[in-house]
Image (cartoon, rainbow, N blue to C red):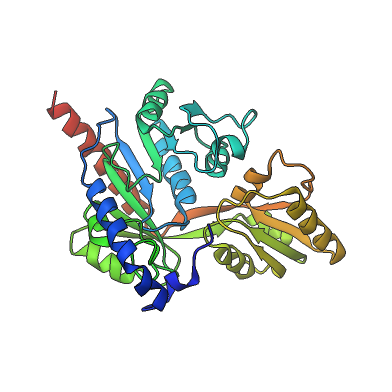
Length: 338
């Protein structure tokens, strides 16, 4: 879906009109988050959002994968496989699956880490453990109470923040903010903006840290694009952030084409993009997630450049200590219950 513009405007008439629905939805989701979950038997670290749409969960999951391996762990990502047809549980196989099977994010992440896709998260846990997982990294699912989370890291784009702060459909929040704050162990603020500072301050009162991070473009990809004029397209939660990142990297973005999050490109759309790029002598550039979604589609130009980024934390030692502490506490709790 494409986010309504009024979600990011304060006190809009549309939000007021939708408030009764938002109150009902918030009551249901808030009560649901209070349910007791099932213990996976191994530590579960959830990477989620307070709001619908994207903010950088996938780069955060990949950064945590690297950290956990440095700590001697064997992480397996657990995903619902949004946008895919397979209910699972199934391990993502990049040679066999497409985005229409397992979703674009699982397909992209499977290049770097084992990914289990399962609509039933308990089935996904069993599959992940059969693969030798010592830690499960949940990609999304913060509001889902099915599994006990040993740590929940919430990702926020520091430029956009939480919009008008209202619950869906009056705003972007998936549940009432106070309910979500109570279950948050740390914030990951991506970028240098100030839009999420109030949320960080609220969590600081609860002795919960906020970790600053930023998306760093791949140097080789930037070098490949410098001196060229590009047509950038993206179907992610915030295409504008992708376009801004390109420009901030010194790339000449001549044209942009935003699509809705998880957009499945039609043959006609692909042909139009290719024709426009050829006519104006532009280089096609998109995100790695979008390129994963394009795999297996007909007529996809072979010269589309995927713009690779990695998430880098301002205080990596602080993140390392945070994760180490939560892993220790999770195992200590389970050991003391034996």
